[in-house]
Amino acid sequence: MGDRNERGPATRRRRTTISGEATGTSARQANGGKPGSHGQGEQDAAGAARKHRSSNDGFKDRLSCHRLQESLLSSESGYSNYRGILNWCVIMLVLSNARLFLENLIKYGILVDPIQVVSLFLKDPYSWPAACLIIVSNVFIMAALYTERRLAVGTISEGTGAFLYCVNLGAILCFPSATVLIVNSMTPVGGVFALGVYTVLLLKLYSYKDVNKWCREIRQAKARTLSRSNSCPSVHRANGNAVHSHVTYPGNLTHRDMYYFIFAPTLCYELNFPRSPRIRKRFLLRRLLEMLFLMQLQVGLIQQWMVPTVQNSMKPFQNMELSRMVERLLKLAVPNHLIWLIFFYWFFHSSMNFVAELMQFGDREFYRDWWNSETVPYFWANWNIPVHKWCLRHFYKPMLRRGVNKLPAQIAVFLLSAFFHEYLVSIPLKMFRLWAFMGMMAQVPLALFVARFLRGNYGNAAVWMSLIIGQPIAVLMYVHDYYVLHYGGVSEARTA
Image (cartoon, rainbow, N blue to C red):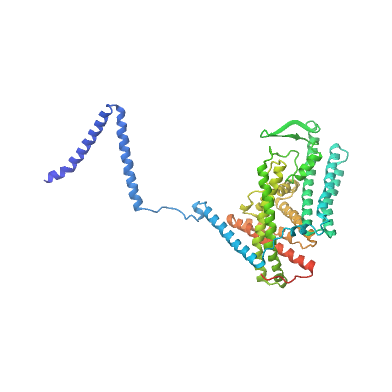
């Protein structure tokens, strides 16, 4: 019995082996005894091995359910799909602002009055000083064009041309500001609009002067290759649909070329701008509808939301109630920032794309991803590309070429920007408080602080905080001073 039991397993193993061999032999006989039929048996064996491994893996999964990994909200996890959290933030933002807007409607009623907007531009319906001031700007445009024509033919020297440009550009800066200050029928909004047009014209004509001067220098250095008069015989095709002549200096000194540049959505002049092949009518219509809708939305939000908040902020500022001042500031920050974002989209996307499409202007990079700014200089370099390109081309790089270090050159750029910010605010309001100037110059120490102590998301949060809080401070300062200066004191405001 013992021997039989001991021999039993070995006997069973032998029988299994013999039966397996028999099965393989019968399979090979069924396949005709071909040598290749042995591969089928190997495949069957491999399949059995895979099943065995999968069975073992199943047992391992039951025994172990943990592995080395980071939580999704940890930066080390590498996870980046937070779309659901972003949607939640948007919904919460919409709901919270809807509550504030409903509270505003219940408290003040409907304050939106589209007709009132006309009074912001005109005091007297028969007197349009801002529009007349803008029409007069054609005198300065023609002065620049004819100065360049005289310089191109050598009638006047470079020194005389530089002097004429100084007079012309100085008049562009001083004439409209003097007109705004002297003419009593000029409203603050009309003054801002007129001075904004003249500021853009000043930057454009400065670029026009520089580029034509560079062309004369190239022509003098390469007189043989640039001796042709109006245009080259070559043409430029864009996608095979539009043909534009390739203009060379001095063939660009025409009224058509000048006014194309004046109306083009850029501050930097070129002899040959990149051109789009055609005007897309649907794209143009979408941008036009966006412009009209967003303009009305901005006016409505200012009348309904910002004006009551600003009026209610005057008494705390007069009494210097610190806690109430901070509360008013934070309450004003939300509508002010929302209107600023709408203005950014309305101006830099809808309006400038509308003008560019209408003029077939090809370069549509009017902004970059400033919302991802982790440093202050990155924001100022990417939220307004036309101004950034002008400062880089005609102000910052020329200073570097003259041997100025980078930091003083950057500070000089901020000084120039601060001057024009104050110029566009103080003169239309007919008061000089330097709040906008100081706000811009405060960006310099803020930029140094953020660059040194904050990185990544913390730097981005600091940039957003400066935008959300900084602008309402300047708004309240100017409104308070304007009320004190023009009305002899702050009237009793309604309680919030």
